[in-house]
Amino acid sequence: MSDDAVHQSQFVSLNGSGSRVLSRLSYVTSEPFTVALAFRVEPGEWVEWEFARDLLVRGLHEAAGIGDIRVRPDLSLDDDILVLELESPDGYAVVELRRSDVLRFVGATLELVPPGTESDHLDLDTVIAVLTTATP
Image (cartoon, rainbow, N blue to C red; front, side):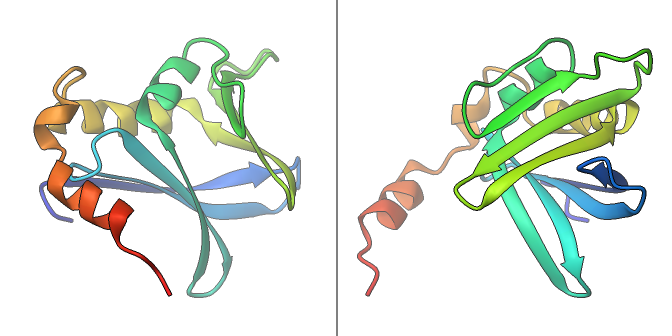
């Protein structure tokens, strides 16, 4: 693992299924505002969702998000469960992650890029180039 990235894998519950799904949380300092959550759907094939790191940080303690991704502590008696709700035109999923694992992941990202210093790590020239490059 490079010193400018954090990766953490765990098995999660997806839509209340008894079979756990391998997931991966990722963070790289070159995209300081964003975290990624990926699910392995087949060997070597992953489906990835990217969203704001702040959403994940806030969702550890209270309900957060009003769009396609919502994060909240579990409302049951198990305080080590974090619930993510993912919605797209293709469907809806509820993911349960171990809150303690997400806390460890978030802590590592905050060590790399403390809150308020994200723009120091953002390469705006690259962002602009990507946004203005036409795709065929």
